[in-house]
Length: 305
Image (tube, rainbow, N blue to C red; front, side):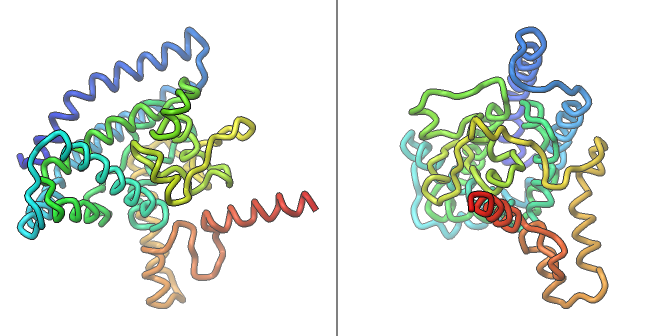
């Protein structure tokens, strides 16, 4: 077992019992206290199964990312000591790395094929947080970890900070928490902010990519607050009509293959079906998120005239 597997396994073994306890508490509050949120045992079961499978499949391929980071370590500029200040700095910079990864995963179809799994539920619950892709080490975005190693952060620390970030994000996936204190909402990602990210409402598309710190969205202009008059409509622009986890996993990869090997397409078109934003098509027969947002705001403008 390699070092990344060891770290991931320890974090997972510590976090999993907490995750399942939190899920049970959330379900109980919905049933007995009429807390906000919906119940669907089938949907939750699919999410949990896909989460457990992601631990296995991503763990088996973890050597790819770890090997890359260990290779990059020989080129590091500094040798930063393992102090509290260094750990905090690594966590903050890795959170920025996550923001970039997450934004790319929504704007480039290849990593989106992995990330679409997480957005495939039409509900929003702690169980949905576990609905993760099985191919994260093959998206290409793990190279964003390399600059942290080149600066001088230990590869193991980089991996550990990423794992902590993932644990924090689990607790964002709930409707039972409305708003947290204003100072917290201003700095950190919260259930309210992340509900927006999971909404397919036109005004919510391509927003709130943050992991732990919402400040990145505010800095880079992708922050959208939750509108009390526009509650998030969860899911995909075109939702899956299945609860089969294997069909959910393969859906976008299969769609990419069909698009790439379709007829009457140039080499450029075939490449763009892999790297262009989701919804791009060579004949403009589909809509990207930007197209949907542009049409939505044009409609609002026309209604005011």
